Image (cartoon, one colour):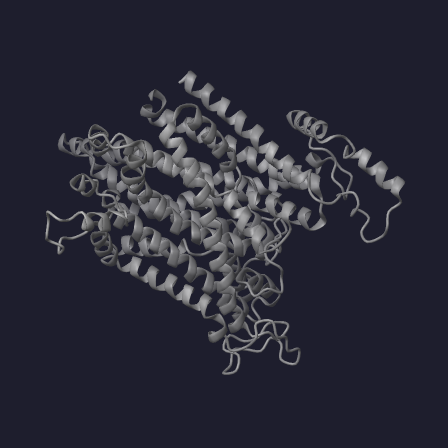
Length: 309
Length: 307
């Protein structure tokens, strides 16, 4: 059974420890593991490493925002509005005299929370429905896929607006609205991936050896199907960050006083060409964040499935 | 082919029906009474409110309201809007034209830049142009449309004064919004074109064509282009569907008087019939264009209609 698990080539974290535990016959732990190989391929990709650094930086900034920020992001100072970048205010101050640098630092929290939470939710729904659809096929598949089609028919922003109109503005409505209109893609991806993996020889082999249905799904089908989903996840966190900023930019995302990049850019519109630093810094924050997630997604796709290159 | 078309149209009807159900559930069962907020902050005479509710059919049971909504929708009637008391279709008509104008302009830019850049990059692989295209397309993807809009506005309107900051519907004022919409898509098209073209260039039938002595031009046009354009057609079709539905952000930045701008304004005014109208229309366009793309795909690639 150990042999079979390994030959399944699943990029599955559980595979390596299980193999090691059963490894009484093979005393050679120096062997290259599946994960080691994936990590090696990933690290060989420069852009992917840049992406990892950007995403890592974003997480650090979001977690340590109070330590990094030089001012209170909400504190107004009407005596010092629209100040150019200086030693005191690195990125200048906005129309209410709030410190731009601190607002950008705190803005990373909204980006991280909304990006991760919405996509996590989308994956949860999408993976469950996609797996059911792909594994059971027939009527279950038809029903789930038609429902997915319906949600897929809404352009992301338009769909999100509909949900926000019902739930009101705020962080939670933005998260829910983005998840509701993102899960369908995950479900479709996982389903088609499962359909192709299901026909693979190693699944037939596992069946022939008498493996149970649960074991086949969790050990053979899922680890091999999840690759397509994993790189999509990274891309779509970037998409979610943009969508969230877009909603706030339109004035229907998080409330305007919250330090958030889309809000900041939106309020900088009035000073276009005069105080360009007001939108250039938050825009750069968004662009770097999105690029980070896109590069990680690209890197993951190539590392997880070299066949796709 | 006939069976395939019928099946796809059947699926489309199901999707449209489901979408109207979601829309209705969200927008008509909204917490709060849309009529109550119509007169601004002033308190309304209950009798007037009652009359208004009757006028818009809000006093009927939800099932009846939904039935009315769908039957009217099929007849092409979207009801009357709250602020101007005009037919929604009448209000949105000219806006639809504006959105379509912008969408067509964007798609043309998109195709010309995207396909050309992808073509050059693939044909001269690893050349200076290929590296440049790859670099630009890699980074363009990270730019949200409102950032591109701001960059264009501050450069070409405020600093250079070439184009008006706010659109008035003229050709000159269409250029910046069209480019804002097209840039990211063009990058994606270029990437896609380069990728599929490199794949096709390696294919056996291309080697055969070259080996049997066909002129390079013929091979490129008949064998390579025809086969590598399929995914690009799909992508452009779907993106055109999104654009026709109204480019929310871009229209809002440039005050372009189209569907997207209408939606944003309607949200601020709580003008539900307009919101429902724009969203229904956006979904319908998206779905119909998806269908057309699928059918076109089936025409271009026989393997799809036969399976």
